[in-house]
Length: 335
Image (cartoon, rainbow, N blue to C red; front, side, top):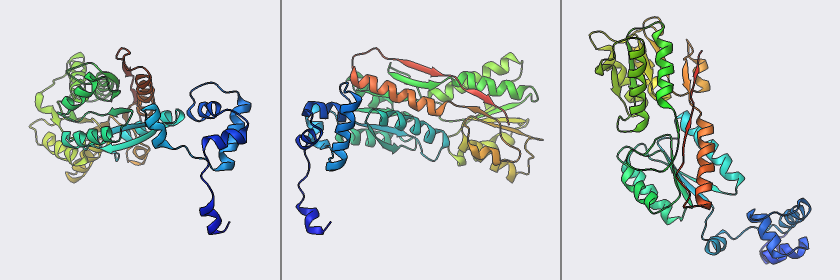
């Protein structure tokens, strides 16, 4: 095709598609928006006409008409974490099947970054928001929930109000880890994230409860608060190793902090697992490359994202439906 011919071509409209497919514009709209049942034969004719005419939906016009942009905003702490990337994949796969697109933002667990992104999502008129709430970041989200905006909490539960929530059972997950370690160790440390978050407080609860079951000590200084980063795991390990009676096993609450713990142990020439055994709360194929391989608590990360997306779409369709709290079960993954 010559350049002049390319620019002279008129842009196809929904009426052109309907004419080419020999159907009504209503049928074309129903196929493209998946808003009503259309027989497979007519659906195929519409899709063929769309391809032949190179038709694309005017999203701006459609959003003005439907008051929906078919976009969902999602906030995670850091896409570098293997757990979060799997959650995002579960969300995106489910949203795509319903014709929604995902706008992703990293908050790095900063309430100010969360607030900035929430304002951006409102400006972009996102139909819903999914988020791992930042520490001290509940206030902004609470206003959205009270205004009946579609919001789903993922991984972390709000502490001061009800909302749609999809989490893993972190109490159980930590108990499984401690139970496994207690077969060989009497002093078990915990490196966790921000203690103001439900995930961390639940892990401390599980750690303490399982140690009590095994009649093992649970000193407060065996719990070290990190911020989910490798550096915080590194610093936490040094704090534990410097105790008068340091733990001989450490459970780290995520992959990145576990990596920091291992770096500190290597620097101190501590043999793993001969002198200190390490477990993680996230799973990654990379853990098979470690020597020795690291056992983990397997989080249902993809399923968490998938269920959160489904809950989000249900909330968009019915803003007044009762809030739902979904708790998924973790598993012990031994290597």
